[in-house]
Amino acid sequence: MAEKGDAEADTGTGKVDAVVYAKQTALDIEQLDQNAELDKKLNRKFDLHILPWLFGIWLFSFIDRSNIGNAKISGLPEDLSIDTGTSFNVALLVFYIPYILVDVPSNLLLKRLKAGVFLPSLITAWGTVCTFTGFTKSYAGLVVCRLLLGLFEGGILGGVIIYLAMFYRRHQMLYRSGLFYCAAPLSGAFGGLLASALGQVRYGGYNRWPWIFFIEGTVTVIFGITCFFFMPDTPALAKFLTDEEKEWALRRMRLDASGATAIDVDQEEYHWRWAKMALKAPQTYLCAAIWFCLLVPLYSFSLFLPSIIAGMKYTSTTAQLFTVPPNMLGFLVVILTAHLSDKVKSRGVFILGGTLLGIVGYVMLLVSERNAVKYAGTFFIGAGVFQASPMLMGWVANNLAPHYVRAVGVGVVISIANCSAFIGTFIYLQRDSPKYTLGHSVNLGALVLTFILTGAQMAYLHWENKKRDRGERNERLLQDDAHLLGHRHPLFRYTL
Image (tube, rainbow, N blue to C red; front, side, top):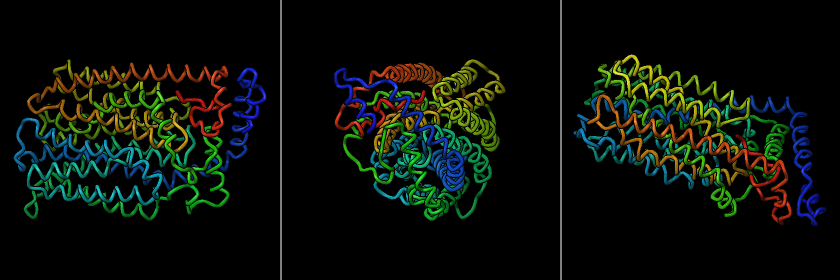
């Protein structure tokens, strides 16, 4: 490496001239600028051939995990003799046990196996489970279905993040993350509309709620099978790219990494050093803590919004329909903030803003006795919590490198963050209906913690970047394995 040569020329002080970073950065920018048109062309092709499938994956993922909330107010508890205590909450909770455990192994499998086969396999499997959930006749059967659903959905979020990072540069990723993640609030809107219709069907001895699972699960299976034929494994294997585009797709990722890697995504091999690097990174645990706090309101909002609105004295069908507008607002806000985030190359400030919106929403739910004000509060929550989650996905992926470090780190972050489900699924209890004071209060506190931790991570990343600007990390270039420094490379700058 040129940087290492410069370092060895100054072994008396053990430091590298600070101008090394500026020269290398200028060279990288120059090469990227020279290929700006090719870069745009490549992104357009990836947007056309990659994003629609990722959007569909996340749409069906959220629909199939959250539709149990719609089924609840369409007769599921009565038909399966689920008591009014915590049994329903347990059925929600068990989904997250395998979901959490498979994150890291699934991300590593994605790197070892063909992504274009592995991800569609998961989709098809959980769609099958969702379909057969409609046939269950007992509470035990429902629990088993939720366990299997969590097992197959567990690798999807981390897998999609890793998959995106194979195709897009660091500061092009957040917008794409937002474009696929906006499927989460859209699933709430779409699921509410579907449930309002399917919850009326009575046919073949299956009345109302089973049809929510039958139809939504079957559509997921069809989509999963279709993905087998269209999702490429890596840029080098994308049939829709020319040879020149394939070469540039790999080269631009190396340039964008600013010294973090000299290895192409399809050539990198796993080594335990990558796992240790991810596990030693402070940003791994800061992001995990932030996401943990954020997912408490996000999961409970997705699962219990129909119940919260039904608690405002609306009928089942009306409550299903009233879940649509807050989720649609969340959908639009995710797209807007994702675009702006990549434009200004910042993540934390948007999370801070979304957190404040969510706080306002939960205060409205807690202090007001008027249904109109409470319902308005759900709009603030939808706009705030949904857009912050893709910001965190982008933040994690941006600040861990190279690919295997990112795979391990993303898996660890998601595993830790999803432990919040043990809280989120148990704070809205039937006995607290219709005010749900406990649930709203816990979510309010979780968002306050999210705000504080986000500020702490921004401060840490800013401090570390300043040290690198001053050349205080350049001694790392004297190591024999300087080409394997990943995100610890002095040329690498963290995204705030």
